[in-house]
Length: 536
Image (cartoon, rainbow, N blue to C red; front, side, top):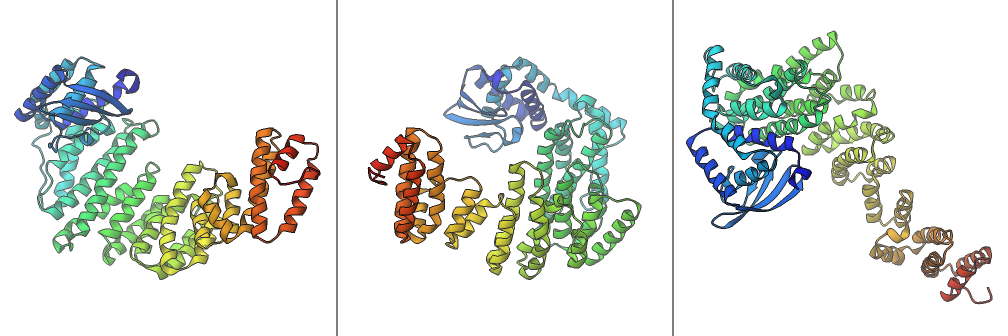
């Protein structure tokens, strides 16, 4: 059963992760032995496949414990026992799963040969001379260590195994072991080690060992992990009052960041976000900005790339030179809309409502044009939804309802949720009902409590919807549909009565009855509902 629900490749990949996460030592040997005992005693039970890469199970130990196995990221596997690392219960469940695809001995024998593997690694290191270790107080030393470790990783990893997964769990794990102990330096080291992995991912792509198009979806989760590492490290650094001792490191960071920026096409959006976040949060010093602007200007003189364009605009943004940004933004293609969110987000976080007013004035035509692109609805909705999270914050603080409504009406149907909520809160019920009709909602699909509230406050707002509903059911031309038509017509009669337009109702129902006098079943339902008398 498991063989039909999960892929063998995912199980074998998880096995490789475990070999990296559990290096050969006495503690891990004992851990493996305990896991083997639990597995061989049939202590693993109630296996359930939650997703193709996530499995839940119970392990009967001293007390039963629930385990969640994550084949994609084994470090995210969990267990109800107190252990904070991979425990014997997680390993036992993994061995159970592994046994469905291969002999358990194949895994344990390979793992127990780690000691010999470590010896061979030492031989490789000697071939590359003595191992370079990072000096805690020098960024240049860190970068040299990163390059040295990558050379070692390349040498000891077969060409077929030089994957993004191997880079993340093998190369990055080696870098993490030598992180500085000082909290500030450790956070900065984690940023640079993540950047090193990202840059060496491009090394593998450019050398043909990774196929950017074919492997995109397998690479993407690791890029997201690298971004999470960078962002969380930046957040930790923000909690400190950055000391001058970090200046030598930060001063030499722009060239590394620039290398990532100037890569082309692949993960463009992600690279630009990291570039912008780093400059905004850590490198926002006038002298560094001026120096980087000069370098990027020289580079732009040699070639054009969207990355260079964004880099220069972001530096202008940091200098509050919005005029220069807006001048270039007027030539933005609509696809560039998501790239402006970083700037909007920063201004929102700073509560710079005055500056935001100008920004939203510039972005409005870009946003409206974006909604005309031929893209999947979900993709469009996600982007416009992200924009409206920011816009709603601005509109609420500045009380600029007119701007919010222009955006909302201009970006329909992707802003249906935001616009309908806005109209409802303003008690503009007729327009609220109308946009529901515009996007395909029928009156019977709207919550009854909302219909009651609208009927009590503005009955005329609902009249067109009930007219459409009655016409829809009459067109079905069958007895059950006529009953539904009569039910909606009774509600329509009530609405006309509340609106004090009974004469209009009487003319309407008279004309309706006359128009469909040949539909005997409909006439009978109208009579049953006392909508017409027997002689109509």
